[in-house]
Length: 90
Image 1 (cartoon, rainbow, N blue to C red):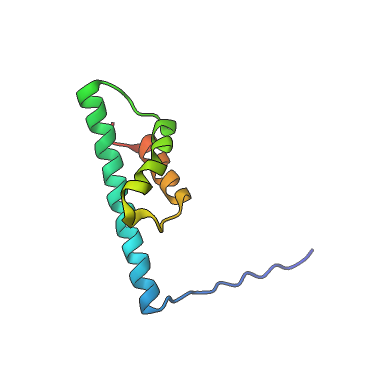
Image 2: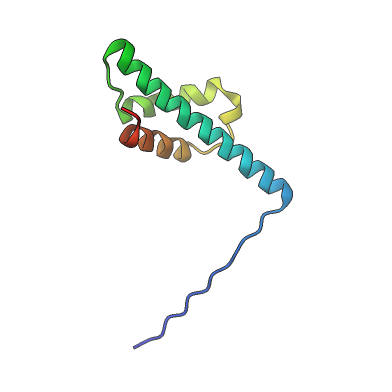
């Protein structure tokens, strides 16, 4: 039997990195709210439910339109959209 030790490291970002991380978290929150709003209004106005794949196909156009979101990885967007579709308000 082998003993396994686990080491935990805490990372403390510099002030500049912390500002960037907080800004990206703010953008993610705003994007999540926009996804929920879009999903809700599409259903209320048109009676149409939006799937994950419909949202996913619109992400490149969204990133091209909103330059603030260009630095955020596409995988983060996909995770937000997937979460919104599964656990959205409708």
